[in-house]
Amino acid sequence: MSVKTAALEQFSYIATISAAIAAIVALWLGYAQFADTQRAQRETLRLQGETLALDREAKAIDLTLKFVDLKTDEATQATRADRRNQQGVVIAESIFDLAGDNEGWRETAKWMVEVEAQYIKTNHLGCQSFNPKFIEYVKKTIAAPNICDDP
Image (cartoon, rainbow, N blue to C red):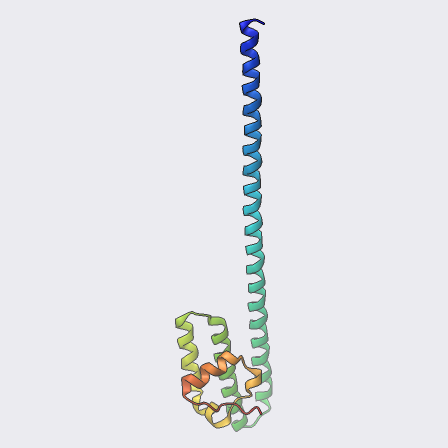
């Protein structure tokens, strides 16, 4: 075998090994990119689910307030004031639920509860229709342990 043939044979081996290494690196990079894409897609789906849940909550609140407005039109003056207070509590609960750990919004919910404190203490709430965490928040905020009219 000539020197030239031996050199070409060695070059052939080196080229084959290099091609195999390049293929392995390409395969590994492709897998890494695929895994990243899958993680990002799962996160996107999770966020979309949260967004839909918040949207449903906002629509439910809007419908509740529309219902109260509808019924307020046919009510007496005293009943209208009572319904406005009920709306205030519903809005305060909604802000409490949507605020999460945002201190600024929690302070807004606290202020709203304090504005409605006399109404809550006098008339009590149907606590079964409210978030239990909100009920505990109201009890603490207005220092009234008995705000529920539920049995």
